Image (cartoon, rainbow, N blue to C red; front, side, top):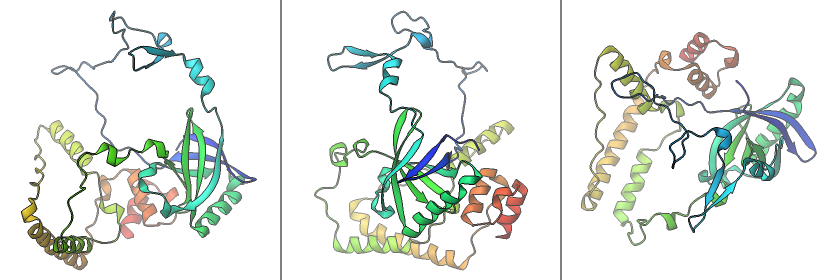
Length: 309
């Protein structure tokens, strides 16, 4: 895997050369565009809005529209001059309790690894220190000409970096959403029943049980069309619950939740079809099950180890 960024992790006077790797893989099915009835690809070109003529990349500048409708034109060189620079330092400025950070601030997830074997000792020391303290570092770094706020924390034998949204980036729901419940208040029995429903549906977090079913169905659709078959449409969502039926709907949901929980406790979890997973998915599942030696396993080895776990 190629790193997306390389530099040094700085904590006080301690500096550790590190590399940043993406921890997330995109499984989205990507389509190309064609003219209907042909195999002619659709292409997009940069054209002058007034003349309709194509414009070369070197002749394109950026402009910011003012309230008056006029534009302030900005040259690429001017943006380069005020860019945060090509800093190669990930500077930890403070440490906080991980639980103190609202998940709203989390953006993307990366792994941090030592740049070379000789830096494993200081890397492992910082990793163990963060794990023992239970705290995470708040840091800033520059990547692709942009400054990022980040959270550095201990993971499963590896440092994890989460890019964070700046506070100014988050919208105020009171200003953005007109239909927030301001006057409606939950009734006693309905509230108790809703809490019971949450209890009935509560369980341990098992990420391997959740899949991107929409992407699965897109792939099924492609396979079916390749064979000339059809695919069953997805079921329509249920009707909104009427206020007068709320208590009855909650009661039935609680009973249903208890029944599912009871049946789930009796039956062992269904075996996952490992052959349908990508190697990246298998590696992720192996990490979650803490299978030893997984980093050196082939796809067949991963399947065998997962089946035995």
